Amino acid sequence: SFISISTSTKDIAVLVSEKAEVAVQRSFSLQAVVQKRGLSAVSVRFDERLVREANVGLELLARLGSKRVVLDAALTTYNEFTLVMETKYLAATMLALSPANQV
Image (cartoon, rainbow, N blue to C red; front, top):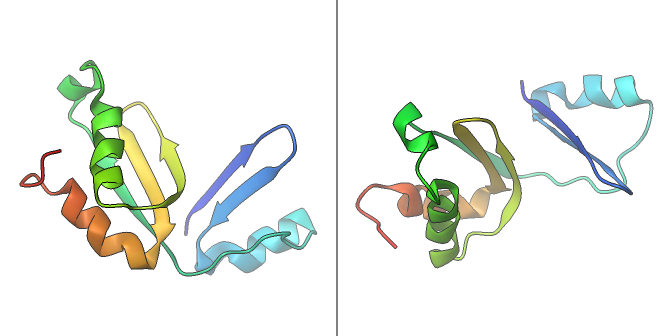
């Protein structure tokens, strides 16, 4: 199961796996305003040495942009990106992230 909650000045965004969807809806006691299905996620973990390098995250996004991948969400931690996109972009994402594909 997967759940991520983020807020802005007007919205609360909840990303949740299909497996946990019902439990999350019950917990919030609300129906979604926008509900999107058919999403996939790819997580990329960086070696600790790369965390201190400039523009590593931007390079990752540039690779996705070069393949015209549209992201629905990008969740980050200290050394990891989790990229959420429609499943139709999954193959292009994997190609963009392969070591053989440099921008």
